[in-house]
Image (cartoon, rainbow over all chains, first blue to last red; front, side):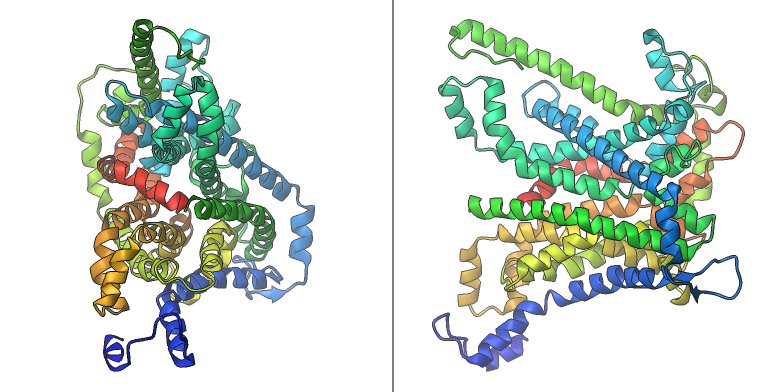
Length: 314
Length: 284
């Protein structure tokens, strides 16, 4: 490339745009993008195309003979299946509650960490640690050493409040799983909101103070609007990861008791690993993807707003 | 918390500020300890002998032992190797693919850079779990099932969109005068990347790599579905360390501690860069 550049005449600046140069420029701009683009298309899109294909096939691993076409019967099963609907609703519920609570806590913690006090960096380090803990480790540690009905630390600490050897995972399975999700994702939200707070121009806050605005009014009228793109981003990223939450469900409750904590990822995992139903899982997956695309369309609009913000800020 | 009237006299104001500081400090410490407690409890339990881990009330004083750690280390070798290879391999691949792509979306952007960026982000929104059955079949036919290559390939695809997005935001920070100067010196695109852009965005690349490392190291769903022994990673080692019966809390805690510590330490050391990375990735 550099050799070529040495031979070619220096490209004229923007005034004149001969065809050849702009064509070369067209490629120069695109070539760096291509490897990543091709990679992502191949690795992330092909599996979905294959999923689409298998969703019209009857394919059980434990049945000899391989896959054969069976029309839309997999889809009929998906739509008449209460287990799918249940897991879908549970996924939405778990994600929504976890993301919203984590974001509210994250804002509160970020505001707290934005103040000066003794040992602030230690406090920040402690607060972000749950995000760094391996989710599988977090799930197992919460399931046993923390929430064990007989030996768990939670029951011991809550004993003064009248809690007596509660079997959290069988009595409040959904709540327990959601608490662990919130515990892991609050630090992530905190990090994003801290970044937002740090980017807030101090002079506007100073000006508000001089004008006699109260702390709450300043927070509501200045800080929250400033944080908005950061909050939207946190909600978006949190949702992307939490809607796929698998570790906590698999390792804390194994989807149970019954199907009390079976979310969509765990339901699909069961369909593939226990029912050997590749076709059924594929149809479930296709329906999931379509629903996701509908939700994501709204999410992308949110992104577009974030970008508008960026351009307005320039 | 409540609106503080600014007009109050100077001295009471200062006093209030001081008590406010102490008050908020106490609140912050209490919250931090609450958040940190499960991690602390994991580490404490890991040093207990098994008989001291299952007691009521829980024991806070005991004679610490490394017995469980020894047990954990003895079986961990292959899992650790797989995890390191998958994490490092995929992170390097993410950077190799992500840096040029981010460049094409920021410094000399293609006309439809917005669509390009949205495409990458949108692939993150397709739940990979939906394709897990077919993914298994594809891997089987490609002879990639239960290989470390499969994890490297998938973890790269998993982290690439976020990475492109973050690296792009760091590249936008490169002053355009520098790029202009390099161009006047006759620098081609490759020299522009190597000698102008990369030195400036290196801290950003570090925080990007860090995020990729965290997600790759901690990944369980793909590993559990697509690997058995030849490529089983640390999260799977962790699961295998939970026996069906008997006392296991101390052993489990030791395994969980060992599996989590690398990422926790890296995250602690690089937390400033973590904040920066997420922030810049956020808005720019």
